[in-house]
Length: 251
Image 1 (tube, rainbow, N blue to C red):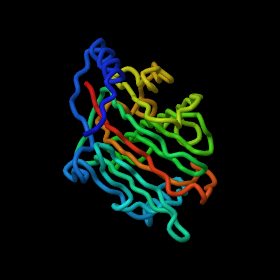
Image 2 (image 1 turned 90 degrees about the vertical axis):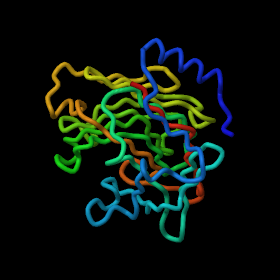
Image 3 (image 1 turned 45 degrees about the vertical axis):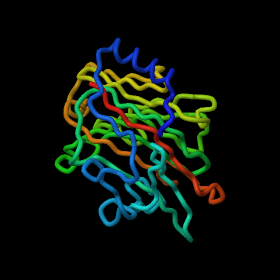
């Protein structure tokens, strides 16, 4: 059985009750395999449509670089010969949400070149493309920048290197489990680490290019290697694991 961190959970519950949010969906990673009625696997290197997954990333995604054990999801990045393997999953076409609190409790993979992330994409991405679809990066960590967490929003008006973003210094964030959350409503998106607000985006002008966040989004979870954001890779650090306790959505 999964160990319950009672006091931390109780504190979070008090906050959510005060904000009048209900748990509407949870992935606790119980059992021995992911529920394919909820989760899709990405496979390969993104080619031919999106080689390097749009960021010159070096990993090849497989269905095999993960396991469920004792109520945790372990995403494992490995060096295999001259390439790297990892896992990326999403709820595209299966679970979509508009507004709410999106929370993950996780322990980061660490070391030069790793890039664990929990994020959301607009469900209309196949119709309008990125970045007009919008992107909400609840958690991004890159091993080249220890003790920092990135929280970012990509829109047509501000994306890539010019996205709406905040880098937060968090000493010892690599140690143990932490919670990362985004609270999204029709007016703003606020980001939290261990229930402390680290960044809020609340533009007055909400055109489609500035605020694509008035539609459903789906969830993504992955451990990328290298690339434009991940940077140079230290081969000696592998294998590395991104460990996820739960994902919960409150509305």
